[in-house]
Length: 261
Image 1 (cartoon, rainbow, N blue to C red):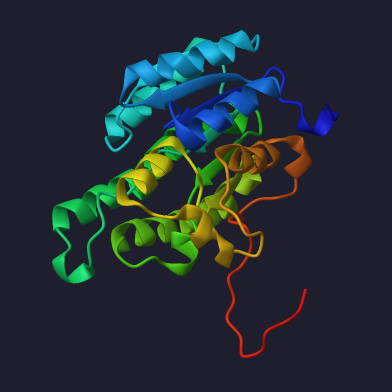
Image 2 (image 1 turned 30 degrees about the vertical axis):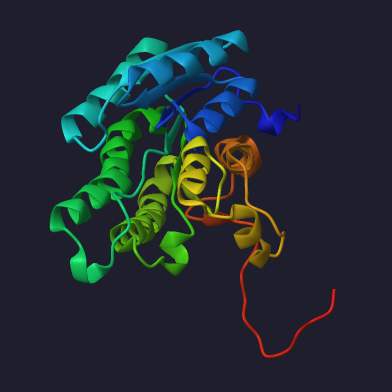
């Protein structure tokens, strides 16, 4: 492994770490040398990933926490830092949309829940982690979405929250850069997580056909998102902060002329 990508001796906290993209991130960070704390609302999947982390020769910690609640997000961060004696990396991965519905029928309670989960939770955890991260010139990565870049009909709250998360990333990077803390975001596109695959199967959605509109012609994998996160928290990205990197198979552009390969 190139020295700049080595995370040996560092401690990472990954929210939403029990499944999907969060699990892939946790395992890759562990492979790169980090000890990993995993947070989520359900203990069983967290314990499973902790076992996988420890099988790689790293230390793992499962933390039950609802990051939408300020006090529990703060306690989560303190528990991870206390258990390992330090905190170098925070990955705000917890997120999701509460159903699909047009704005005209949007339930204000669901709007609030999406903003709390996809935006406020990241602020709570980041604020709590900052004093620890500044001691070690640490790094934060916020997991946004291409919905936050372009918007997606039917998930207005999710799209707005993810757009806000990208702006939170920029502001935090500007404010915390002088303290040596870098803050970046990744914006996954169509990604074949366990939850996504189950949804595709349930609704009969043809993901392979839908993905042909992307320049790379396919959907992404959680491990591909994890690779970008691992880069951003490593010394290889030591001069990168305040950025949002799409991991989405390329831009989908319209045009009046068909261009040959």
